Length: 439
Ligand code: FHN
Image 1: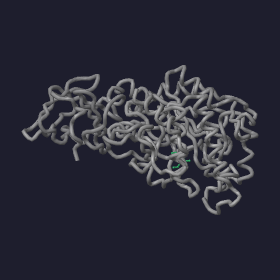
Image 2: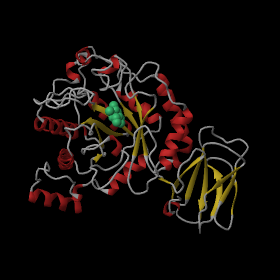
Image 3: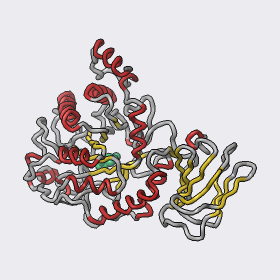
Image 4: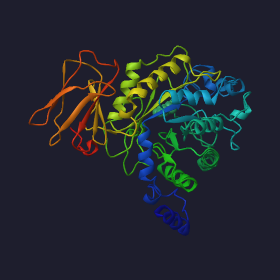
């Protein structure tokens, strides 16, 4: 009811162009229940892909650096990923225990993976001629994953965007940002109305041409199309160092720490984005993260009350490398056993560290044990809380005691059941989600 009222108010006074204002009308912000649902998902697949896979260099950033600009901009004419199978990609995500998928519909190089009417530089003008974004949206719907779209606000290929190379220098005086933003709105309208993304992952907001006012305008525009679409914090003018933060002046619904685990934060929603290898786009023989690093990153992200958007870079033929598929499957196998300690949990109340992290749901406190340094694992004190029961998730009871100050000591088995992350459940005499975060 409140949202209908909001919409009527906004329609009545007319959606003033927000090009002048630098903050979002609180009434149109993404509802808390929608954001809570997003944070319950905990784990998603990020996919960086485009014609640059033909060179195995970084998407966007290798244009005019590792790959001459003219050569880079012609790659789409060779791009024919005949082994692309959207359902295979979505099943890979599902088998990994992932709940959402985010595809780079348009990265900094400007190439569009959907049949946009507003740029000829798109997949329909490659030999492949199929709607990658549409196929993934359909496959996500079929397999019950939430479909999300990455969209860059900088575009080094578009003549109306002033910066044409990754060095960010020499803004082009012939560029026209008003036309550029108009094209962006048209393309975003295509994406939202045709594919109905659950979340939009903006990026590239750090270059000088992009102003906060554009972010307000785009956020407001998107909310007219879908009041519930979730929007990250890279839509306003800003610096990369602002990505891990969320604040009233930063436009967007959640913070986006990159290639690192965000800090424990019970107030502001956040999602770490991280590569399973080193490069965002596919790179031959790139270094693959170990299973231990993958699982412990997920546990520490959840322990910090955040989501993990974990990235793969598919090959030029449309397949995701088998070693990456296998690594993700191993994560899924871990989640098959321990998923209740990740999905729908809150992080904390202890700060994640190299020995353990904590998540919680109802009266259960989950202790993710990464290393067995000694027989006893001593947890910070929980005042006024009683541990009624302690046991390995899906396993045997754990000896425990609690001293007068509330310090909890767990007696670990000689052999932990899981080399990456063994989860111990502490059943409390209170709701664990209400416990204050321990400094
Ligand atoms: O420049 C991009 C980069 O290519 C990649 O897309 C990451 C993913 O978060 N974002 C930007 C770097 O911060």
